Image: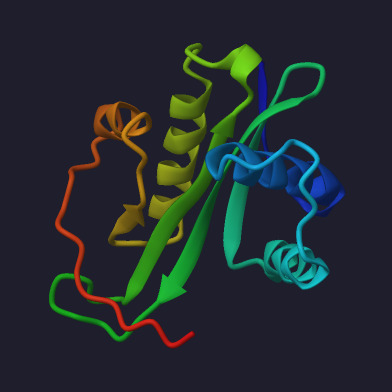
Length: 149
């Protein structure tokens, strides 16, 4: 298994795996088509440099995971205001339960430390929670949200 930090040459592969993951997680048909704007905005985000994506390669891409970087006003607990959010952790079914997701998440944690982030958040499914706990994440209560849609 080879793990790489995805750069521009991997954009098509990253997008393919992300859309596959979204289909699986959301129970969509494997041929479901996403809105063009959604795809274009996602591609632009990957190109922006405000994230790091890890790919797991085994003759083909079999997994991916991303971390997004956020800058907020500093607080006492986070004096530099740098935070991160892990998302899109996905391993193809044929390669699950082999430690691939854990390796990708650990690479992202190391990347967040190198970026000076003081906190990493994520949204976990019940199936994913044990993996994140192994990596040191703890369950928290969610705050409040105002939806402006």
